Length: 141
Image 1: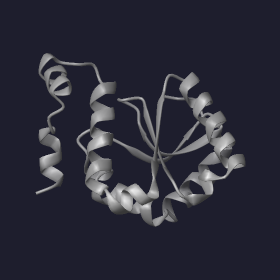
Image 2: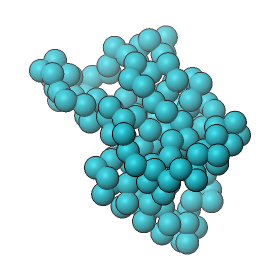
Image 3: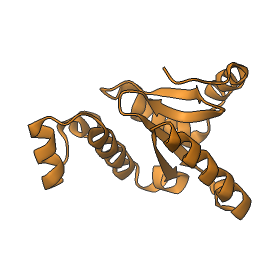
Image 4: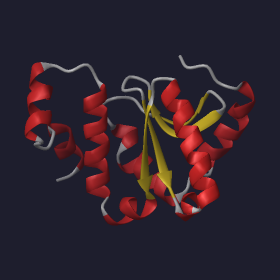
């Protein structure tokens, strides 16, 4: 288990109850029922990750317009560097992509998870061919 600042727990609980529209969509329509467990608003180090998958060592951060100012972009960069120093992969996803290309976002997350897990020969072959994973068919007709 990753170390975390216990003082962040009340804030994490509040953030879980007050997710943004995009976080809710990603959680309820994809990550909550994903075959590998994700947690939302997870305290890690001094931060609270929007979504975290311990098995894949993956942090997912949906970003709205506030993340594209120069000062916030620098804070995000420092946060990413610190999380990566804990051997985590951080992916940032624009809220517009969640709105306009939800299936593509889910496929990208699925690919990142698969790349982060220990590889079996069949998964490695799928990654090389870049074919859709069967898991996605469960989420999308």
